[in-house]
Amino acid sequence: MTLSLTVIMMEATGNVTYGFPIMLALMTAKIVGDYFVEGLYDMHIQLQSVPFLHWEAPVTSHSLTAREVMSAPVTCLRRIEKVGTVVDILSDTSSNHNGFPVVESSPDPTQVAGLRGLILRSQLIVLLKHKVFVERANLTLVQRRLKLKDFRDAYPRFPPIQSIHVSQDERECMMDLTEFMNPSPYTVPQEASLPRVFKLFRALGLRHLVVVDNHNEVVGLVTRKDLARYRLGKEGLEELSLAQT
Image 1 (cartoon, helix red, strand yellow):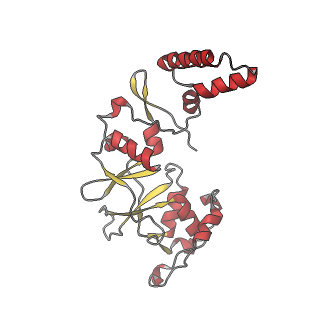
Image 2 (cartoon, helix red, strand yellow):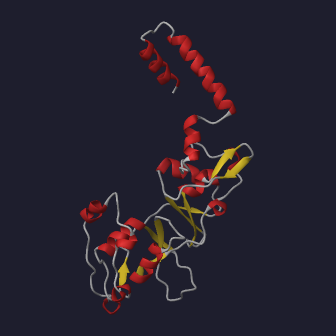
Image 3 (tube, rainbow, N blue to C red):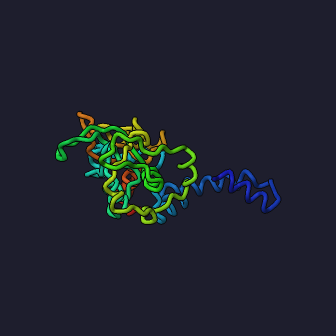
């Protein structure tokens, strides 16, 4: 920024004689300003409630673990899920996550099954839009297959779930998510430190990170908003209100 401002001022004045003094003055002003307050861009990011992650995790976050910042309980989908359940989950305004862990179907509803993959909200909406499901009594039938073009045509403005019409009979159908989910999502143990989680998001550009226990069972989900809620402030680790978009 210091160099760009110097070039702008020299271009505006048409005089390069004072280029070095101007750069020196701007550099001094920036160092002094950064010592007392945050940068202008950082202030506007905070005011707009943008979930922006800095390069390094807060220095006071080394004692925190993934268990303390994750969202729990997590809404999971079974590998073979009922269409009505998918519609209800996507329509639930209390959970606006864009990714859902997929677990193995278990005959015991009280038993937590192991993680099998991760599927995005946008993918589920495309599947519902193209009626990619079969009747419960005909699970042996092959459901309709989609091409990559079907997902590309809906990108980037995927239709909202409210615009997808699903009849009462279709709600009883079953949807196999195996072919469409990510079978190997990134995961961390619940004892992982916050700086380690932070580095994974920054290095890999993640939006979701599944937190699992020693049995590979889903215990939580970390998103960029969960990490951005914690930043280094005047009194250490403080929580920010984030935009819902």
